[in-house]
View 1 (cartoon, rainbow, N blue to C red):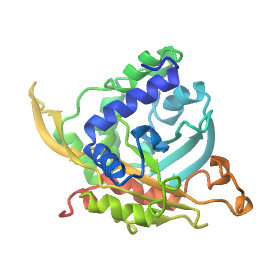
View 2: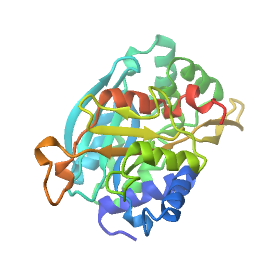
View 3: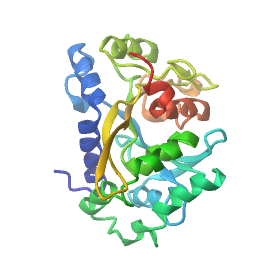
Length: 302
């Protein structure tokens, strides 16, 4: 069991995420069987991502405190007008840790009925819950990230939110559940060190890729190339409004893949490190990756 708080938090996030997202184990098995890795530890985790709600005491300003305390640096801001989202990414204290990507729904940009639904849940939180945590206690932080922030939503509220913002519906049920982790493909053996070839492996293993904007999403500079699986549907228990629960299949989490090409100024170097590759994110790529949990993707026939 890890003793470093950051290691403890990341281990807890990945352990639960892998249990809930069968695609994680399936893709890793395909990599092992193809000889791309010898053990799971050979996989470089490019980044992990969280979704939040922009309401008092929560959102980016709250969740980021955990990772800033662990030595992460806050980097560029991204704005997604159509999806009504803001986001920041955070660079890790050491290269073997993943980048962090945190997005936040601009709740105030939603319709009054949707805002009212969200606030009926988040109003239960009267102060920033992270401020009450001992951020040096990895176990306490891990427990917090996997504990409900508000009461279990009703199916009616979930569906009403989904009609306007599928992002909002996802968060109202999943809270801080890990949205995805990302396999770095550029360090894998050729020819699977490119997104296009790695996608072939993923699809041949029976997993469906998000095709919003194309299965391959490429940054404007051509140096960041991404793809992702479509989120698998999971059985979720909702409040039925009568003191009991009801079950509904909803989108869970997914797996992302990233290829970061070598920056022009580093071309020709004998030893390539993380700093020699394209860093950060690309709003146009991320905009389409978000849709891995959207019904337009999850309801497509296999």
